[in-house]
Length: 183
Length: 279
Image (cartoon, rainbow over all chains, first blue to last red; front, side):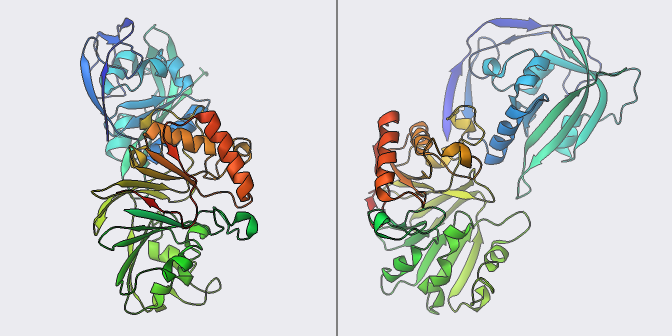
């Protein structure tokens, strides 16, 4: 068991994401300040004691796979914390994994917002990540609007599925974003 | 704790004069403690001669399998305690998503691969699934966890009050990594090997050989050394040598890896019959 103490470093950045109507995540969004350090993402100025344990081999392999894929991929643990995202996802989030490390739910909400496209009918109103983690089912949401912090809009389809090991233990979830370029 | 390899080759037994210094048997290691408790790690071809050296009067033996590839179980059918009705034999190993450990072992211990059925063995046999988790056998505190190798595979960390051993004979922690090693959180096997007195670790390939074998579940010697450094081990015993590499070539390749990586811990190539005392 490895215990690490890490202190925040780096340049503070702010994102304003206050007008979200529909979120991938349950918690409401707010304008916040978010510090990017050289290690894990953490709240500005706080000394955090983070207990780092080794990820399971299944999660390690998911990360390795994601790092080779063209599509943006976010890998979540069972609490909904983003524990890895690949380079294509860096473009969507607007930050580099090397800079942020893991990102918890609130911080993801501060980086991006997801809203439904008024012209489309949603497949269901459930949040895909919650479906994957709480119901252990895959979920797919179409025509969701992903808005980055710099106000760039992307139309995406989102697929989230749970990661379950041989012993039926839920390890996390994997979210893939498919950019939608059609009308 | 005394750790004695009886088989250090990977994949296929490679007996003969050119492999006599390190031995030609496939993976098998005996671990004993002062109270006489015996653990056997994997059941490669080395387990036959290991059984000949078990103490008289021993009534129980535990065999811990890392996985069920043939080089790690082929010796089971020739393990004398299985044919002794006075012996209590416990076999620990991983089940798969759809098959129990017993069902998986039956695939080998049954015709046409073997004439004796698992259920007909006269010993008192108990099978235990080891996925991930901790358990104890006598004085040994054991931690099993899945590690990176094709198919259900575990590594073991074994501790006593006197020392600690990590056994990861088939392990490819560098699989898919754009650079290796990554940080501990994202390195297969790290927790098992962290800060142990002795690590027995896969060292099947050279760096030059690896690209043609990526995904086969094994490490280069360089990666074994890098993994040992990341985990902070005190002593590394490279293990699971490629069967096509004779002793001279093995020593030369290990020399290159050690001189290039400059480990800050002791490195002793595992060899049949060469014991490590951890107390």
